[in-house]
Structures are given as structure tokens and as C-alpha cells.
Length: 278
Image (cartoon, rainbow, N blue to C red; front, side, top):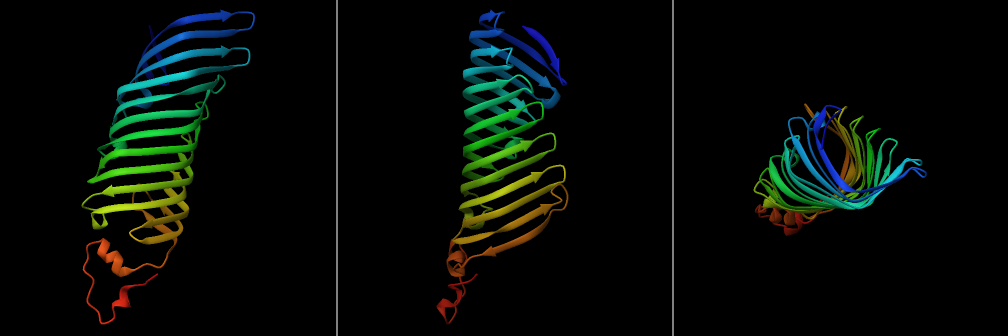
């Protein structure tokens, strides 16, 4: 058991396993590795992060690489940045000690979340993705991401979301990018148009938190019998948002739209008057 302090983060670490080290090749193998840690402070703020890890660890200190095939990771009853819950992850981890840099060809993750991350509500998340994270440069990527958000309940809205695409992030610059993003929504709530929302959104999005700017390009949306496409930039996210861009809406039936929104269409001499618009 060790007490440690790193970048303002403190905690305890305990590990056990069967270790073998060959001084001639500088290779280390730890079978039956089981490690636990309780972390607080630093990037966690006032929160806490208890974690458990198990697997077989392999390191080649000459080449500066390592691996933990069959890694199992668990964080139960965590509280990070006012987000609470539990999380489990599994995959084959490759490690470059310089950086350090962590890679998963396929990471599988499941989590139950409540609090700030879901705007005071709750949700269940499952995700699979290839992951590449450079902890030194604070750059990460998710490739081939498939995520499902179920049992979602927040801001008076309930339902589920499915997301896919590729994402990159630079936490040092506070810039986050999603390419080939596809979001499918199935939501209900009294504040939604007609009390429910089913639709699909595709887009490329770049969020620059430092500049408080969101750029959404090549977006396409389909919901309520309407399809739209275009490009939009939003500035002043933290104060007074300003929207700029161009959006085009395809042909749709205003009469059918009003029916979906539970609005009674006006009686007109020509019933075709509200049948087509763009």
C-alpha cells in the first residue's frame, strides 16, 4: 500500500500479483495482477474516484512498451465534477511508456451516470470504440465509436439516444471534434414539439471551449416529416449565443406537421393549400 501525490491528486494504491523480471532482457511480467486505488483532489476537485484493475501486465523496459491484455477496470460510487455513478470497462491495453500513451483496439464500457453530465438527471451508457490517448500531450481519439444512451431522464425529457462516429479531443487546448457523427433520438417530454421527438442528425462538429464557439458543418436532420441541411456556427456559448450560417429545408406538408404537433389546421377552401411547402 502506498500513499502518493501527483499533479495535485492524492490517494492510496494497493497492488498484488506474481511478478517475474529478467534483468538481461529488462522484461517484466506480472500475472494475476489486481490493483485498487482511491483518488481525490487535483483534476477530481472535491470528488473521489475509487478504482479496481485486473489483468496480466507485460513490459519491455528496453523498448519502452507494455501491454495489459484482458484488462478489466471498474470504478464504483465515483463522484467526479459533480457527476456520480459507476463504470466498468474492458479491453486489451497497449502502452507506450513515453508520454505515456494508451491504446485500445476495442474498448467496451458501460456506466450508470447521474448529476452534472446529464444535467441533473440520470442515464445508462454503453460504448465500444478504438481508443488512443496521449496523457502527456492531452490528446485523445475515439475511432469507430458506437454508443447507446438508455434510461435517459433529464430536464423533463425521457428516452434513448444512439450515437456513432469518430471523435478527437485536445484537453490542453479545450478543442473537441466529432466527424461522421450520427445521432438517432427517441425522446418524449411535455416540452418537446408534440410531446415526443424521433429523428436522425448527421454532422461534423467542432467545439472550442476556450473561444466559446461551436461549428456544425455538413449537417442533415430528419424529424417530424421535415428534412434540413446546412452549416451553422454558434459563438458566445457562455454568455449570449449568436447563430450564423445557412440552412435549407426540403419540401414538407404543413398540414401533416401540424397534425404531428397536435395543432388543428385551419379550414380552407382548398385543402391542398397546406399540403406542400419548402
